[in-house]
Image (cartoon, rainbow, N blue to C red; front, side, top):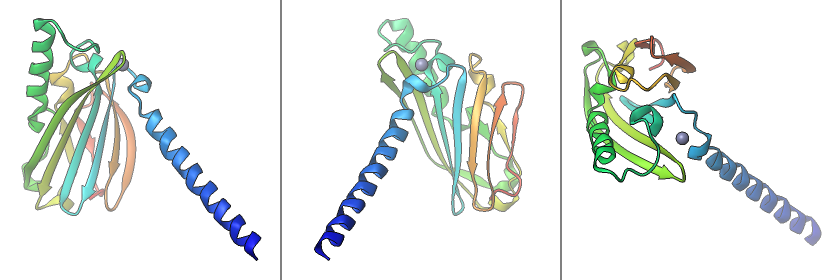
Amino acid sequence: MKNIILLKVITLFYLLSSTFLIAHSTKKKKSLKSHEHGVGVLNIAQEGNILLFEFEIPGADIVGFEYVAESNDDKKKVEDALKILSNHKNMIVLPASAECSNIKNEVKVINEGKHSEFIANYKISCNQLDSLKRVYVKYFKNFELSKKLNIKIFGKNKKSAYVIDSSKKIINVKNHF
Ligand SMILES: [Zn+2]
């Protein structure tokens, strides 16, 4: 009996540690080294009547370099980019009919070795979320080095994933929220 319990404990421990390993490797997978230059990530998640837009974009797509900015020119490029990113309307526009208002915008740039990424999070509350059918993409227009967006939508009613290129200006979110 004691042995069985011990075995159970060991199995549980093993499961926990393998879960930990999976979590760890997932995290490692998110390392900036694995991002693809030219391809940004946009996750759209729903929490009740709130939408979270999370952009993760390689520095190469935003400012054209990924080293830590040191010259005044490069610092200005990063500063200007963060300014553009800090207004969600420069990235995405929601139709007026959805009656959305912005709650919070957060932007930052992270550096890791030879790579960097710009992270922009927008928290937007919508009164008529169920009527939201499309999201307009302004991102490509404001960052001309960008080429693609890898989009994942986690809606209450529907989840989807697709990749759009800079010629596409609309994300179809019909029936998602
Ligand atoms: Zn990179």
